[in-house]
Amino acid sequence: MEMLTLFGLAMLALALAAILIDWVSRPNRRRFVPKIYRYPTELAPPPDPTRTAWSDANFVVPDSPPLGEPVHFSDGTTEWSGSAFLIPEAPESSVVRTMGLDQEVVDDPEADLAEPEADLPEAVEPEEPEPEPEPELAAVEPEEPEPDIIEPEADLAEPEAELEHDEPEPDIIEPEAVEADLPDAVEPEEPELAEPEPEPEVNVAEPEPEPEPEIRPVPDRSEGWSPGQFVFNLTRSGGEPSNDVVSRRFWKNVSMSDHRGAFGKGNETRVAEGKSPVRINPRTGQQEIMKLVGTKFHDKAGQPPQPTWPGDAIDPFGKS
Amino acid sequence: MRKEAEDLAMQISASPDGTSHHQGQPIRAYITIEIPPHAALEITKIRANSARTQGLVLASNEGDMAINGIANETLTLWANTMPDTAIVTNPSDAVLTVDLWNCWYYGNIAHAWTGNAGIAVQPGEDRVTLECSDGIGPVEFTDFVVGLTIDV
Figure: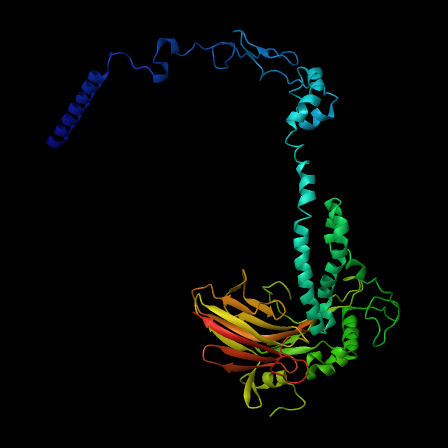
């Protein structure tokens, strides 16, 4: 009990000390005034009953001003935010419309319409210089770098052409042969296209138009099939051959070609029977079967199916 | 040793240890090497049959390999596109076990492990040479020859 009394007296003494310090520290012994209203001229303004909903007066909504006019308050101030937005008549000049300056032109549309043609070039200056350097660049750049580009291609074409001779296999080399032929087709056109604008040169640099004609037309399909014929031939009844039928036809055709030995001796019989080749994956010990991609006639516009072994290796040097 | 009715790949797959023999030397379908952490495997192209595009498949068993800015678990280096020396790195902190085998293009198809395909390994002082026979035609271990060196 004594401890409690002592504690209470101590607390009382502390409170008195705090009050004393507070009284001594205030400079003018005046009533506390929030800082924002420190000076008499900045005292809180009296509430305006016409503008506040929580004042003693009823809430008053000012009358809507006419279109294009600001809201006029009782104290003489105006405010545009409360006014209805006036959309001016759009000027006839298409240039102004494209610049999105319709609202800015409102006050004096006629004057602006007269000026735009004179002013816009200044405002549009960043746009106009762009087309100007373009032709300059187009005239200079394509001429200089393109020979640089074409020359290495021509250089590359030679070794590729050599490789072609070294590698008699046609299926792999076909795309290379196309690439090797392209520089030859481009070179004679260069001098003609060096003088005119670069656009024709761009067309020349496109190697795609040439391979396109090489795409075979969709072959006609007759009814019935015998070994050596088109694998997508219709069935005897005129129906679409199933995937299995196409696969069987494909492998029977392979067995009649020079590629029949490409799958090993163990597969020769299978291929002759129209079955897909198989192999043993030595890493897994599992048998893998060759898959055919594009066994539907319309998958590749009638192009023969493509056989592939399972696997998803990546060629880090870009060609596989 | 070799049955006439079977080709090399069939003999290898039929053997319990995955090894056949040709003229007294062991032939495998693939070989396995280990690349230490952050080490590089240097693959040098020594000889390639120009009749068919030859390739070397590298398949990691547990992680990516990095080469030419590409990281993947399975890579194929083709003789006609790879540089004379290609460097495969192991970017991980663990040993990378990689299987290697020969592949080849024939009839616009990438083949492997068929016909007379097999690898003869010639160990050297500082590098191992792989002599690969592709699956086309008779057994010829000159179809694709590459040297392997590990730079730690």
